[in-house]
Length: 212
Image 1 (cartoon, helix red, strand yellow):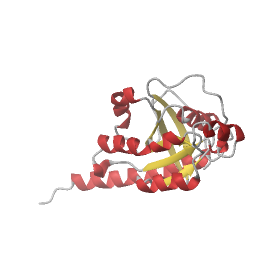
Image 2: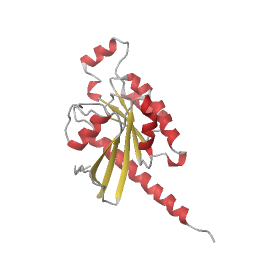
Image 3: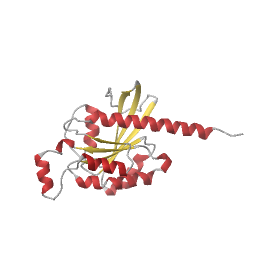
Image 4: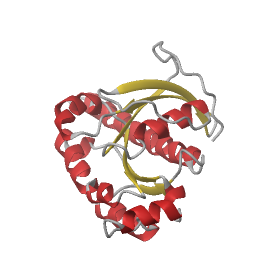
């Protein structure tokens, strides 16, 4: 996907305006993923998100210009009520977990439950499951740290199995630090959001039809 990075504080002006919401446990790399995509490079996050943040990014995909509104959300349990505000009118949701943080994969079903609880079934946007920090899967230091608590890095198969369990439309892995798979994540998310947006528009048109 060719990417025209034009973050702006102004309201987007293109016809295709899509909302992408990123959720997941704290410290799984939500902010880093968004920041790396926006800036085309990795920067060490200086602070955790304590409330949701939004960013506008212009992208081009399949000849279409799209305004992505990226919503970065806090992962702590006590922010659940605040996160509810971010789900309204979402076109796609990304659930993130970290390869070097197996407990975050165990939390994925809980995140899916939260999404299901905030959308009517027919209005649930497509969900992508994203494994972050894939560069640490074979990192000796990361492996040794996990050994201390009798854990191992999450395998691709383990991530894919959970993705199938929650009916995610895609399972992808990436690394913000290594800039691996970043564009693929947002390309697939944008395609899924566009497809969902088209379905929504068709439903609205049918809803406006009056049978005489």
